[in-house]
Length: 192
Image (cartoon, rainbow, N blue to C red; front, side):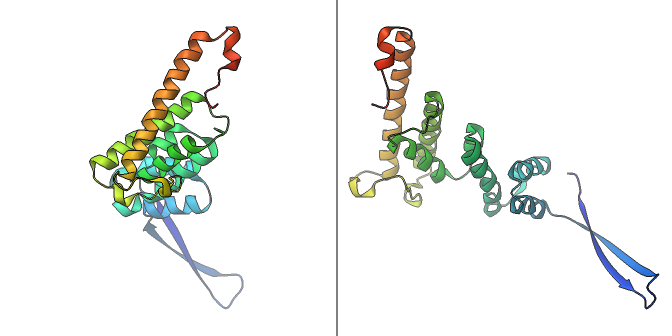
């Protein structure tokens, strides 16, 4: 690991204005402190770069991994970078993003293949949550709990909805590629 040190400066001045004594102390800077500082300055990409140099993700305590999630979430929301979304540790957040796309009438002009990939990541996280039996721990802002059948698990319902969306979208992409260039291609819209 590279070591970074911070200089702490303490100055004492004598009574004469022309002379001063400056004392410095060197102390080791913790990666968490440095990364948190970059995040406070809204330098999310730099914070992730620094975390990568320190292998912070591997060495961080479980409760500290949310620091990097903050960066990934911000970069996802600004750039819609799928790699940033996949790097987020918060399964509920990703499931909520995917479910939110499923529920929207307008898909915010996202590419269909990107929507399919987001739904796929959401489905993968649903399966992970079901396997780890953590479904009750997840609260989803995009889920309509009033319409939920109390006999089914919320996560199972969401997984089923996402899987259905992936199948519909995949079918649409196959058919649209097949008829692309024909006169009927303009009338064929996935979201209607």
